[in-house]
Image (tube, rainbow, N blue to C red):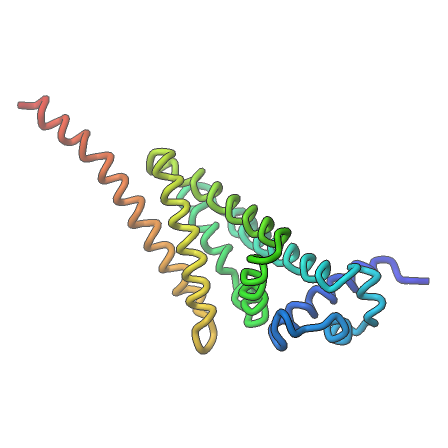
Length: 210
């Protein structure tokens, strides 16, 4: 009689094995048999749980997105101001788990593969829209809603760009340096829009005091 929870454990093992196999062999070269062997199960059992290699890859991507969201939520638990929440979102995107070599390889592979896979592309689009929305919501404290949406898109682009640059460097990725770069961008944008908002008020004060 199968042990209770065995299916969930095997699914988790297969997803973990998929990430490691992509890192070792590449997205397109890895086979279901190689993944199953790494997970310690038969190919038939892997097919039973996921149906096909493509479905296993899709499940792995959903798992990685969930891990990313969990990292952000964990950072947000102790963030009690809009500025702190912005920092928490940034830090969550650069969590230690996301900077593992195997995770980096899997993310890069999925981004490339998503160009020709509608389902995975939609998953990434949903994540990107959620990230921009969460950033804009907190940025509205410091600027107009229109400007907040603009800066949110810029911040999201910074997160993706900095992540890729650090991920492709030789040697271990530097989480602290990546976070600092995005934080500096956000701080500069907040300062710019707050200065721009204060300038008309100061000009009005000077006119009325003459």
